[in-house]
Length: 212
Image (cartoon, rainbow, N blue to C red; front, side, top):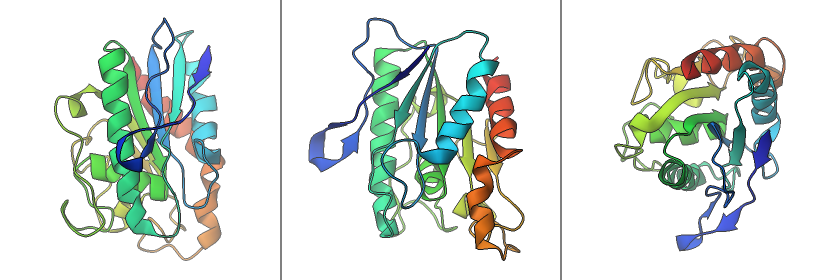
């Protein structure tokens, strides 16, 4: 069963999606931040990832939460997304302590997840202009798996698979031709390829293995 929560306004004008008021908690909660310019929701990459993950869960229930942030070309607003995503993690973990929490993000949405991992998306350190505080313990420890696509931090030598709080439980997918995440990338169209195989299947396979 897939349940999709609706967005609601919370403190300080930040949009977030807390856990739904359902009687039953999901086995798996996916919190995904869409890419720049995509309409509200998890976006095309997030949807492809979730659709590939569902059949690998062996009947376990899943609930998908979209990080509701501007995702505009004012990239400093990505920090708003990190704050909203952190609030979502706290809400899900507090309401459903047995749910396995999965984080994901595409493009600017990947930068949102970078900040939660104590990684600056442009290669600096947390605290630089445009960054947000990392996810606080013990909630960072509650993250079971992470999948990011077209992550800007990868271009600067800080993939989440190897860097920050989620190292070892993250997969960081980057097309070699994608200039957003690859130092040698020179084809901007490649940044839109993450809805195509092998990316959805590879990410879902990694996350499913992490979930057990």
